[in-house]
Image (cartoon, rainbow, N blue to C red; front, side):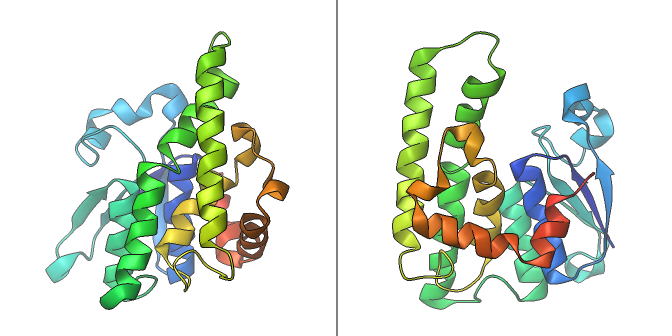
Length: 205
C-alpha cells in the first residue's frame, strides 16, 4: 500500500493521476497547506522541504518501506516500480525524462509565479505580471511545438504528460488561452477524457 500525502495543487495532483493510471493501491493523507500542515514534524520527517506531494511505499525496494518526496522523483519511482510510463532505456527514456525536467524546471515554477502575481499577491505588481505571463506564453509555445504531429509530448504516453497536465489545467490563472496553442489544446482535451486523469484531478477532495 502506498500512502500519498498531497493537496489540491498542480504538483499535488500529478501523483494521484499516476497512481490511477498504474492501478496501484493507495490511501490519501490530505496535507492542508492553507493551514500550514506541511510544517508538521511528522510530515517534515517524510518531506524535508515541507512540500507536497510525498509518498510512503510500504513495499519499497527489497520489500522495505521507503519515503519519496518531490513530484518528479515520485513519478520516476512509480514508473520504475511498475515498469510503465517510462521507457527502460534508449532514446525514448531520455525523451520522456527531458520533458519531465522541462516541467519541473520551467512549466511549473514559472507558471506558479504567474499564479501568484495574477491571483494571490496582496497588491498588483505589473512588472512581475508582465514577466511571468510572457514566460507562460513562451513555455506554452515550446510545448505546442513539441506536440506538433504527436499525441504525447515524448512520442508515447509517459510520466511527462502526467507532470505537465495539471499545470495546463490552470491555464486561465496564467492568462493563457488554450485556443492560441492548438496542439496543446488537442492534447489537453484528449488527456481530460482519460478516466485516471478525471479521478486523479479530484484528489484529495
